[in-house]
Amino acid sequence: MERANHHAPEETTQQSVAPLGVSEQHELTEATLAHIEKMSLYVSDHSGEAIHPPPGCPAEGLFGRIRVGSRNSTLALIQANHVVAALFKTHHGFSFPVSTHSVKGDANKTAPFLKLASEVGKTNANAAKSLWTMELEDKLLDGDLDIIVHCLKDMPTVLPEGCVIGCIPQRADPTDAFVVKRSLPYKSLQDLPAGAVVGTSSVRRTAQLKHYYPHLEVQECRGNVDSRLRKLDADDSPYTAIVIATAGLVRLNKEHRITARLTAPTYLHAVGQGALGIEIRSNDANTLRIISAIDHRPTRLACLAERSLLRYLQGGCSAPIAVQSSFRSGSSKLNGVANGTSNGESHGLSNGAYNGISNNTSHGTPNGATNGASIGTSNSPRTGERGEGSGTLELVGTILHPKGGVEIRARHSGFVSSDADAEAIGVTVAEKMLALGAGALLKLIDELQHAFGPPKAGVANGVPVGDTKTLT
Image: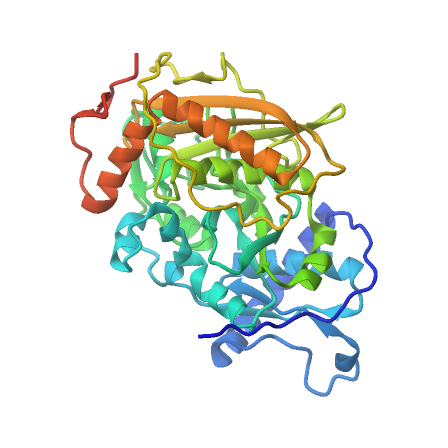
């Protein structure tokens, strides 16, 4: 089927824009939440339609339109509205109608991710992420939408042909949040007694919790932010605490529920976590010009490096891979390229690579793994661009055994002045991880994707695996 080629109205001027301030974000979230029920009812009655100004509005004809697509959830709508508000600050001659759409990944909020991915035929780790994007991307390519607002961590590292990440706004806090049940007094993961149940929907979080806190029990806890909090606080809840993305809680004005932030050097975050990815058609140069006003170059460089690492390793949200990035421009340093909330120093790293920073791990040695051929392309429209915003980018990458006990880490830093430079940093870190034996863990994870059972004890690609074994 031939795709429609729709272009946004031409824009002749563009000015730089500061990110929305904290008070602006808070007020916008409150306004969105106040109308969310009414908007949800409208959307359910007008499935697939954009939310437009009222019919007959005298000002409607004065506005060019950039049609914005979003997942059908409260958090997704808030994120889309933050992007729309930032765009409107520099493009007053445009309207940005938002439409919400159901995606396969939201249809089943109880099944474990690997089982859900298998049920819809998405066994490849990267392809499985399209459970949260493909319906929206179909509408983008068909010309029904001009941009899509995604959580960047939910986006596949290889996008469909004809789609690119047009911009990445300034990143929010990329850390994970430790949230304790309201009635309990615990203040940190270390405070929890043996056997306490921690809920999470993430393979990465599960692996890190089992690795660093083996005395705890980790159970599946899926759903949107509000449903997970309700499950946690219920009188009959099995959970003592849950681990969830800090950015989601902050964007929903639920920061008060955060008991503690889980930060580097011990606890690393997901690739792209805390950032939004704005997806557009690759041939839509005018929309690219319009949304470039809210692109945050340090965030983009850091996130492209993270995504390059994940793409090179052929990982996805089914692989326990975590990262930490920092960017130095002049005398400033942006940790995770957010707002300085997490420690960006890579404690204990030597010679660019090592295995394990927890009390139960030790330094690793290379085992000759080489299965890391670069897969796909960056899907960045600015790959070759060089210009302002150059600096030193540092990236730490880690992969863990799904049940803990083994962790492999590597780091690399270098000068970057283009998207291609940033992506090269990601490839270098991935190659160092493979040299330390990451290929064996990836092979094991691939077996798990097809089996949904406990990992087999023994040896995989020369690397011991099991509940408590470490690389030596």
